[in-house]
Image 1 (tube, rainbow, N blue to C red):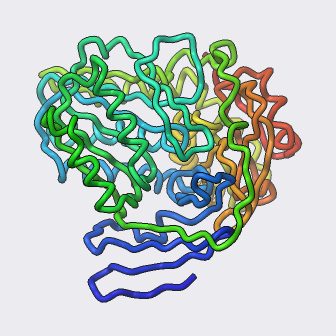
Image 2: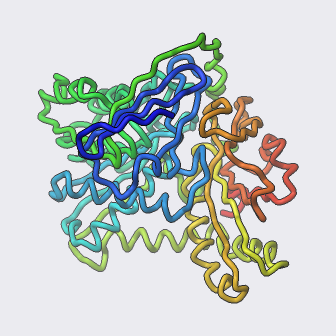
Length: 445
């Protein structure tokens, strides 16, 4: 990796040698975050002819395992930046996360936004908040819009209808993803949303991500978009890192078949049976003027219900029993699967907080890390050191992957699935890991 420091403040240029070319990145000197660029992201190579490189986040727990504390913290910092950069005027707000990589990040952003509003007395008046993330899975449920992520291995996105949308009339849209490269997917989404009943009153759009690589030219496509101008909609870009990138191909890229990752488009209701919380269909809260009925307190009550309904205490006891045979430091991996990332993440946080007494009693340290499987096809190289391939657990007969994971590095691994137990056979090679347990959460509700 070449590293040429530029003259103005923290701005620098890096050139990264990839499998099929050279990726050049330039940092904007205005970046202000406690996380440096190297803390936030690594680099990976896609099996994709539309875009052969990927910014592999180090703080999402998708391609690279990460600490739950850090994952929560980056969401919190994004919320702080959002409050500082935008108006705090009370209004109904729609939060949308992009599948698959940002399903957990966007949900955490939603939680931290409500929490920040509570502790800083920002959210006071009657307001409504709806969080929902896009999905690639068909369900027997009313759709609001479909749109395309054109460079992706799985380009089609669905945003489902939530009953609150009938009268929500959000004035603010929070659109959350892990990174923006050109912004084209965001613009496709926004233009589709503004043609629906949900887009009638939107006046502010906040585009929020960890790393923003959009050029000034691409940002101008939002600022000068005629529809946004006609509707008087203001667009804000908020990120922990802001820069620009370019990719120069230096070799012939093989022809990859990306159509095999689009699924069979059959309804998945029979195998996805999450009855208590399903962010694909929306998570809704309404605040009132009474501080005792504050929306964040409602969320905390729901969080306690999640712990109970999904047997978090019992699962914690199972893990303690498994690791109690030796008084030595332990390392535990909690895995989500595909878009199903948030509930497993909450368990990773729960487990860490409830093992404090165990650590004191045993005079040891238990390291909890979090990650999720996914459908994104990456090649070994750069920051992708390990790759496990197996069939998906949604009956789409497509490959899924787990990256940078060696089972021998962990004392115990717990994989959470939202599909029913009959689908566990698809995890194939993972089923042979002696230290792994699969938990089908739909069987616990």
